[in-house]
Image (cartoon, rainbow, N blue to C red; front, side, top):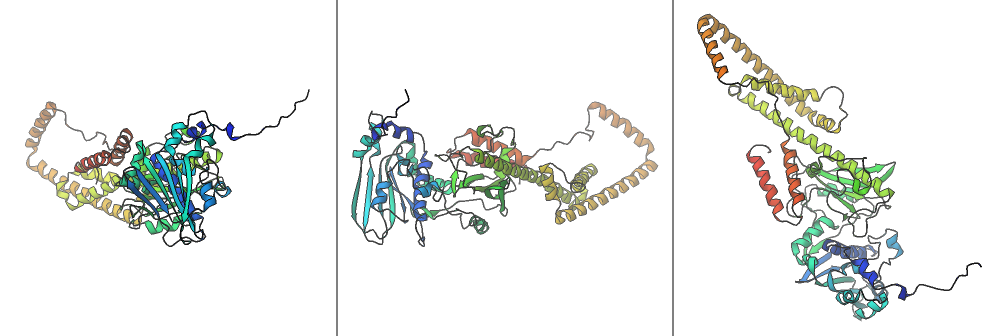
Length: 536
């Protein structure tokens, strides 16, 4: 007999309460929880036809276990406050990427973080304000019972209304009774760190390169930034003061744009202070995705591009600070925003990111070698300034080093990236002129010393031939008593900057990221290197 279709449909009884526990369990860290509610605040501003003069997002510690996040965006009317409690249901505009959020987690991001959630909101022209309260703790207590999700939620939330001026438009989110690791959100400095490093706050206007970077960022479609305040004081993205001028780059592959990047470089490994960071942050709509330096794994096996780009000397990424802003709308982060969703487009983007990393590693390795070459120039200058205090063999060694430098700037350009970048650094007209002048001066000094030595030998031969022979015998006896340096030993050089960078990298990997002693330990090691003259 043929199959006969039976009438049936999904009902609320087919959706168990345990679904909510599975949805929220372990999804967000304390950083992720704050990010989700700030993201909602950003979206609220994006829905306004015209931004207010000061579109601030204010984060405040209410008491020892409660924080609030307030915006003056579009706010919510009755229909919106009822809709915002939906789970995994988003407006089509969000799915199209118009807004930052797109998975519909929304106000449930703090489900595991606090005992209860309270949202107070008003929409311009509505004449009312609304308050949504959800008892997260009570829901969690019953989430594993054999009941449907409607039965679980119905008696554990309420919406109240009151009159309000029609000019009001705002939303205040209160996370009440934070618990466990989420209590870190009540620490003001931790709030500032999360905002400075992860959220779309402004670049510190005191940063010398802020204007140039902002001009670049404002050309990126979808880029957003807001004044984000903690306890009334604005928080900024912070960067070290002694960085070179910014450089800008677009990451493309097969005529497809994936990201736009900016970065500033230092002359050595950067030691971050306060809320600064080094290496690169990956951002989508100016929200950070994953940790600093995401996708700097050595072989890329964790994200499926093994044997395509194997990075080495990753510590050299610490010589730079900047950001990679994803611009391709097809590339999206995973739900907790710890990485990109690994589809074909994302893997291509990751390869482009790793190629960018490889170039920056080559830059800093070349710069490390360039620092050594500059020291050679300084040593040569010191010899010229005090010629009588340096032995002839030392002068010859220094001359040979400068001639080797000059050879690097001549002939066919090398294929290897580090050597090619080093050649560029050594080939400025200023350095060429200085190097040529020092080579000429050292050559003249050696010639003068050789001439003086010949004259002394002639005089000695005339006046004391017998004495010379006796001295020669004595010298041979001295040699027999102990081997003397021949001057032919290979001169060992090492890259002190790279060694320091690698040591710091090991320390940071071995200690917890929230260990406050990391900065002090790293600075202490840097001071030891300086005392021994290994770095400037």
